[in-house]
Length: 290
Image (cartoon, rainbow, N blue to C red; front, side, top):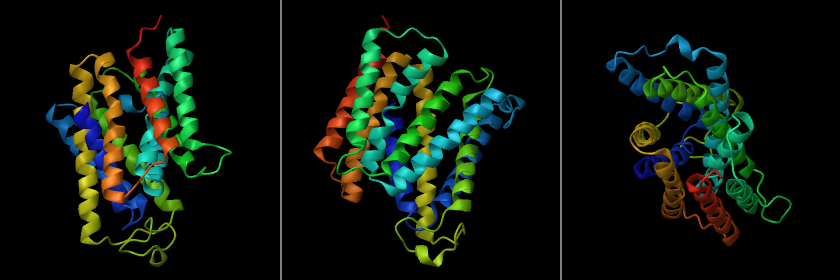
């Protein structure tokens, strides 16, 4: 799980860099296609169909819609906001899943976990600081992405059990490619005006990327696929209540990467909010339901 979180953090860093040299939508399409190819190969190697009929069900359609929402808005947040801020807000995903499990699936959630969920949302507000000086509307992109990922995780529980992890991987990266297509259709050029200037790229136009952009995109895909595989291994071989809290190591890696690669220096309120989210999440995930 720790290796998976490190991989996802590095993936975000490469994505942020690639989006400065070519349209973010184009980056997502290429990464999505690479992931589909990788997991499609794993599915075929296991003797499973790459795209089974069970993917085309109402429950999977709901999961796919949430996946597109999560990937689209979180990718925008990574590209347009500090990496540490987007990662901090993302850490509230397990808390939303706990809330959704109680409301949608009728799971019993005790007072301790309800308090943890409330504290976690307070931590998110500390980072967003709505109505206060320092509020950045772009941070709402990370919030929308987090809600999308939480919906995906909840919908995954209702997914047909016959679907393998490789098949779910194909579906997930297909939604990433779809997110990129949507973004490319409505967006503009590279984020931040990189080697391929934003002014030279027409609205929604793909570009012929330089070699550096292709290398950054390949690194994004490589780390993304490896992290997904590590995450799958962690959830299969370890007890969920034991391995899930280690998801929060992603924030540590994101803070280090953001500071080292992009010179990010989160303010005290952002760091305090991140600590509150992580502490409440660990409390909710490791505490008893009673």
